[in-house]
Length: 203
Ligand code: GRF
Image (cartoon, rainbow, N blue to C red):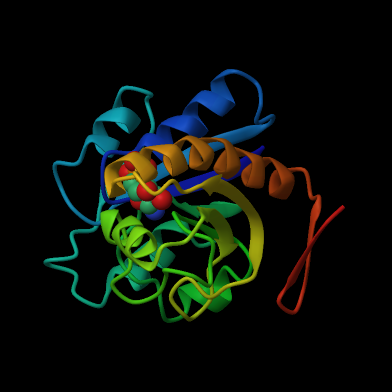
C-alpha cells in the first residue's frame, strides 16, 4: 500500500480530489494515513473525518517554528509521500532531508512566476492579472528547503483573459489543480518519476 499524509490549512478541495481519486480507483493501492492541519476549524478537517481519516492539528500559533519537527515525529517511517494541499506553513529542518523527494506541493501559478514568500491564495492571481500575463496555471513540485523552489513535476496552463477577475482566474486554475495533483500522486505511487538534479523525468 502506498501511504500518503496530506497537509492542509483551508477548505480542502485538493484533499477532496485525492480522496475521490482513491475512492474511484484512479489512485490504486494508495491510502491517506493522516491529514494534518496547522490550524483548527478548517473544512479540510471535516472532509477527513467524514472519510474516516485520522486528523491531527499542529496549531501554528502554539507550535511556532516547531511544526516541521512535529510533522517529522508523526510521519517518520509511516508514510511514503507527504502532500501539501492548500498548506500555508513553511516546511523546514530535518523533515526536508528525511523526506527528500517525498514531499510535494501544489501552487496555483506557473512556477517560477508568482511564487515564493507571501505569494499564496488570491494574491497569486491578483499579481498575475496585474502583470498582464496571457497564460497562467498550476504547478506540482517537490518541496525542498526553499519556498516553491523544488524540482517541477507537472504544470498545467490556463488562458488569462483581459476581463478576468482574480476570483475567475482562481476558479479556472483550481479546476486544473484538481486534476494535476492526483496525476502527480499516481505517477509517484507507480514509480514513474525519476529526479535528476532539477529535472523530473517521467518514465
Ligand atoms: C489552492 O489554490 C491551492 O493551489 C493552494 O491552496 C488553495 C486552496 O486549496 N495551495 P484547498 O481548496 O484548501 O485544497
